[in-house]
Length: 386
Ligand SMILES: [Fe+2]
Image (cartoon, rainbow, N blue to C red; front, side):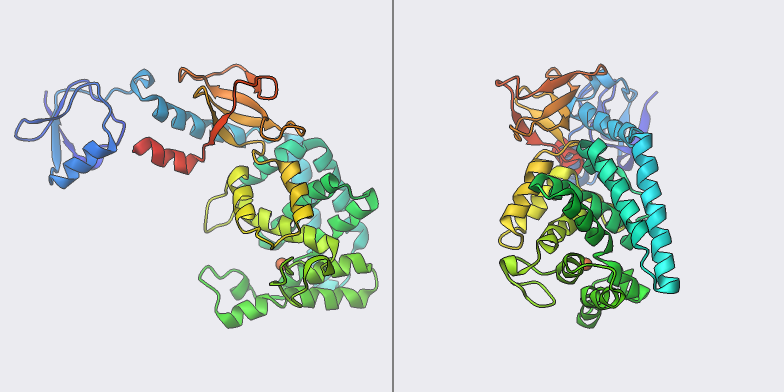
């Protein structure tokens, strides 16, 4: 029996067992052919409100285009990934968040900086970095639970800084001090009124001025305590300075900025791109790195930036890529001596078939094969609809 289908129910990619007709019996879409965006737009342009068909929607995946299948698969794969964060990582990460919240509460109530607790957290984070370095960025991008700015941003920035610091070759003692600096770099934000901190609209010049006081506020408060050395204090005071002299509060240039502050500037920018924010989606590691690089022109210390690039590579683990044979996979680990040739877990083979077994291609071993492009799930969706 003929069915009437409202144009609002039509979705791009839908396939019917019988042709779709206009109400005056003109065929607009043939049976078995997926509806393209151009078809849909044409129907809208013609002012067609309803279509008629004797057929049914084909739901069998074999009839969905390869691209559609790939996109759906990537989406479901992402859901799976969310549950694949190592329980031990999740436990230690959440433990650090809890300890850091305790630290802040104690600081607010008693004005005491519990340095032993900070050291303990830093050492837990070093443990996480040692064990999960390759997974950290994808885990960070996957977490989308309530993002408490000071706590989560500080823990994430510390993770990123320690990875960068290790790659740069800092000593164990320096790594610990860099970690403490990263944990405390935005502690001055705790003094900013919450209406400003949580404002979703654009800040006024006056409000922005208030935000910009956070490095100096933190420096002054911590300096009074006499428990932090100058490496930590300088890092906190200078973490918004820029290598090109356009930062604040003192517009310091180049190596006049403390080394740790130069690390924090990169970590801060990278974290801001990758982690969850209520007003936008997370970026994949690749896009986050691209955004940081795009703004890098002289803003960051090139040697420090290089260390981060080496550590995270241009294709950080978790990046979804298409290879030159058209297969699609996710980067599982980096070959440090060949950063453009990581190991890829194949999700969809060159024939468009899903792969459920664990097939890992090491691009370093297979010289014929290379990464054609990075697939961002949103950009990819746009491509599919064309
Ligand atoms: Fe800051």
